[in-house]
Length: 496
Image (tube, rainbow, N blue to C red; front, side, top):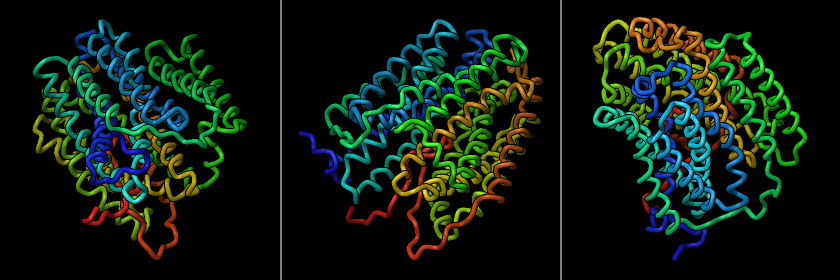
């Protein structure tokens, strides 16, 4: 028998089942966002495709994920969190199986787009379920467990993906999602209580969501296809015109909607706007670097897929160890120092990454950059998310965090779309080690400049809040792919 929503305890068997469903559900979405990068060289070789198609393999997923994150929260509140979570699981599993069976690059890209919709339902649904299922005093502990276990899943993703690619085929990184999804659906049906928000608005901003998909898709098309088709080609010009029209209309619709998908009035708060601008710059740098790094390691430096996946582990390990400590430090001294230092540290790691084109040795050429990158991520991510939450009104805290997550996804989408062209990595350049290495160095320097701009913006705009009598709660997160949708984690007593 299911315990009613809002009455679960963290240490109970029923509570552990709900956490397991949430972690596994959001975990497969998080893993999929990171593991595909390791598979890109193998996918490119099998389908004989250029960089533009590989960009779409990644961007197609980010496009719908970013576009539907906010809408999926509204849908879950109105129609049921468990129901929408289950739909996300099924959709993600079916799309994953289709990706694994893809007969062509075009079919793979189309299924990645569908995966992104399922991923949006999984990510928002998993957190909404935790918020609604547990008693208020145990929600922080439940979210903390979700964040920590989700981080472990994300860390394992590239390593597991590298092994599957080396031992079998890139297709297995998608097939593996199917049995996990079956387990998640079984656990959710049996153990997760249904919940809805009785006060949720009946108006769903479908127009806003549709315009966001069209606008972002048109931007991505123009940026990805521009170098190949020519910036003056009718297709690219039409895409840019469509993007301007759709995004302009989106802003108009959101300003007039009684229940907007994206309340633009929130951006009138200076700290909220500047923190989201820093988020965009930083996660554009992160997304661009992690799109090209696995390709460079395999084709430019001669690593196997397994070695390329393992090469990234130090970043996540350092992040896991120090992120909560970083959040606690920011709660004591304010976020300003870390939001200034973190981007510059991360930018330094990208400059160090240019050394991997000089030799193959991991300890000499790769590991130093991974250590500095991990320190940079641990320094800025938790304070960044905390600042977003604190700069919005308390009743908008969840929405503020969701917007920040979306901004991070859009930053990654834009970077993956435009960075290879800026670096001169077009067509089949990525298959030639010398040309790829030259472009990779340029891309890392460009991304480092983005980090520098974020650090400068933080210096000019971020202020520390007035010191509170009680320290604010620590913050944790589950991946460098994007900030969490909900992160405040109160201390938990031993009795809990």
